[in-house]
Amino acid sequence: MARLAILASGSGSNFQALAEFLKDGGNHQIACLVCDKAGAYALERAAKLGIPSRLVSYKGRPKEDAEAEIEDYLREQGAECIALAGFMRMLSARFVSAWAGRLVNIHPSLLPKHPGAHAIEASFRSHDGELGITIHYVDEGMDSGKIILQKSFSRESTMTLEEAERKIHELEHLWYPQVVSDLLSNF
Ligand code: GRF
Image (cartoon, rainbow, N blue to C red):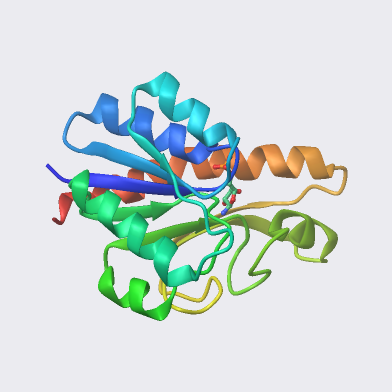
């Protein structure tokens, strides 16, 4: 059994998908959620799911301080692995190397295409025939770590941005929990 921490900044739908999958799977546990945005819906989801959470603000302090607070909390909660799920901050090289091999992210495009924020819109507005998701290890770059899994679908000519978004989130919620659960099984 291994314990997973999730870092999120926003709605937390991937956090919830991970929590529900791991709860039903039985082998592993969600240790905690860390969120850097006050009022983010992810925090409310954690409360509803009965998962410990901590708001760690980056405001008015060096990134290193915020990261040290995150790591103290992860240690307290016994987290062995981290899944980023819409966490909108770059982690320092020190943090990334301390968690190497135990730190993954999900990104809503077929990397290396469209890294960074607004990837769904960028993919949709591009002429790419395939849209999709990437699950990858995190390195110190922007969405540049080693790819673990990609899943895609062909874009139909009539597809709207909202439909593309919905399909991408469906893929995320289906595949991220499975990949993370496999990763946890190696610990
Ligand atoms: C997802 O699309 C994820 O791929 C990206 O940020 C979004 C987070 O959504 N990194 P949610 O907060 O999990 O609903």
